[in-house]
Amino acid sequence: MATPRADILRQPELEGRRVLVCRPEPEGSRLAEAFRRAGAEVRLMPMMVREPLPETPEQRSVLQVLDNFSHVIAVSPYAARRLLDEIDHWWPQFPTGLQYYGVGAGTAAVFREHGLKPRMPAEGWTSEALLALPSLQNLSGEKVLLARGEHGRELIRQTLAQRGAQITTLALYRRSLPYYSPEQVQETFTDFHPEVVIALSGETLNNLVELGARHHLKLDPDLIVIPAQRVAEQALAMGFRKPFVPDSLSDDDLVTSVASCLSQEAGNNG
Image (cartoon, rainbow, N blue to C red; front, side, top):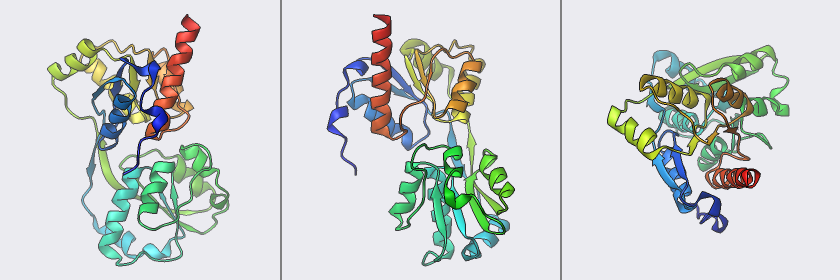
């Protein structure tokens, strides 16, 4: 287990600040604890649950010929874990000659835990950053396996197909908005009234707004933390006043970025 960095044990800018973490589990609890260590008051209310999809004959056929692929891409840590679990069913040893890719450091870390050597963007953690890698530019006739959730974003698939790749999409899980009782919603959004909301995907943001509409909530945090500029534009269009893209999505760096942003806001308002 990683040791928390000493410099984020307490962040004066976060002391007593009310933070709502909307990440799915298990990432949500881990991030919530990082904010608590930094001094924040935290509530955890995931805006997404992930349910593994049952194996289909088509999925089985793809996994059995995994060694026919040149490139294997996972869009998230959960997608990587689900993919590796499925590979384990069919391959006592991982086939050689495949190049693995992770969208972001967390996804790459899952591959490394299994002894693989994934490629990832040197900077950034978006699909756009992954698509800038030199090894994904000229793919004429090469076979690419894309592991993701059901109804995932189409950018990677479409872009690599345009570059000549033969893309196989492997949908390994389903995402949905969990049910929360009116009492839970009241306690979290009205009684607790978060100042900072962590919503680290476009779908998480959409689900947050959908929950707000269902319960006639006014969602007005001082800061909503989102993963990328395209989602920031989405948040602005939804009426959020202050979307913020952190320097990194790792727990410790995210906490530090939020603290720095709050400090700057305090300085500007002082």
